[in-house]
Length: 267
Image (cartoon, rainbow, N blue to C red; front, top):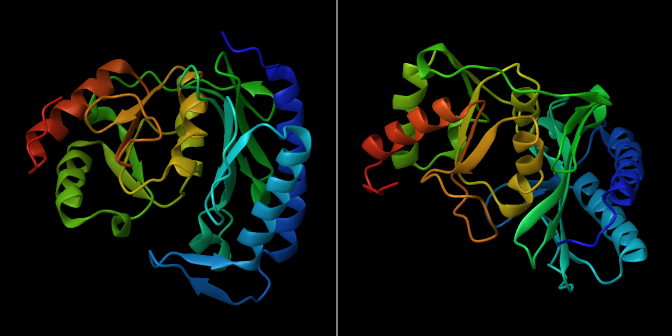
């Protein structure tokens, strides 16, 4: 049983998010250069400044905790590890679109369980937080929709560009069977799912610092989030993610993935 005080974690995370907001809003919609990383994704001075701030705050408050982030080397800890993404949606940030967010999650490596997750949207003044028991959106309870059929579902993904060709073919089949599909939003679309505004997200190429914070937010709002084979997400997951409002919708989606996936993976 985890011995950590989740109330203290929530208070710390709120302060952390407020500090990150201040930094990101200082740079948002101001001209800036950016570089391309080896995986061809962009990085800005804002990404680096926010992650540096987050690491400094976490180290000061929890010196025995590990840290895994997008822009810098992982730092080993003892039992607990933070997963942080300073700007999830850097392309949105660079292009002036407010649908970027800051992600933070705390995972108990001994119990293999993500204890706390936060999706913060600085430019929208919106925040989802979860201690694993409940998900709150700006302080109020968040609940997923009751959609149980793919034919009735509103499905999202961030962009066709994140999919390898084989995975895109799978997404095409699933999304064409849905009520309608939308693109864009990065972490924001998972918050929308947690609040019942969309029903299904299917994506690929996510990293641990992308999906760790999403897990408690989705699950504690009544939803489900797994890999494409229906397994729980963990640090070894391949980045192919399904988030659904209901078990029935998840099962139907996984069955379609299994039938469409050219690699023929069984659930």
